[in-house]
Image (cartoon, rainbow, N blue to C red; front, side, top):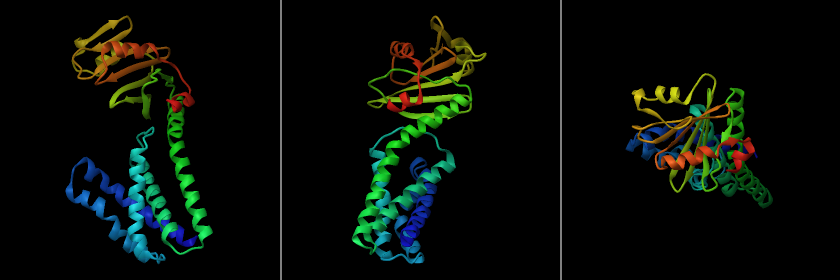
Length: 268
């Protein structure tokens, strides 16, 4: 058990280093950072495993990074609800993935009784699946509670053919993103207060004259690259955005908006 804990700590350090390389490698396209992202965990894992005096450290330094990479690929292939975690949240996620991957690899390659090996691998597998399945519901619960605390009414559209892919609660705003076959529809909710659809449309665009009322209580900007609708539903000011949907389709979506609990959003 002590060796498994040390393996988890090694994996957490590797995960933290991977997080530092993700942005320059994938978003900025830096080749050296991308190479370090792919190959760096192997020599780093070898040095850390040797320093931590892990049994079969030479084998773990190979299997650990492979296990971490497989975990990342599985998360990418197994889509779920995401959110913006911020800098520290991202670090914790990568540290968790690194710790999980190295612990799993250690349970497979380090010498230990067969029963202990099977129990450890089973616990890690079941725990990993449970965490992945519960992550979406947890994100929705926390985000809606944060929004409710800020006084933002939670309303959601009925889009049976779409899947909720992203939830973000920031300040006085709750943003929901739905996706189907690569096409997205964004729903932004704010506390109505003194705001009006016309005012919000004008504040978000430099040329106010381009905001027009398309139907009673529904405003849009004719020059916007994306289709946008601004309206009010109850105590919520609603903004719908899509780069693929037409105005008629967004008007239909607007008509389906209704109050929703976090459990209803989690099922979408």
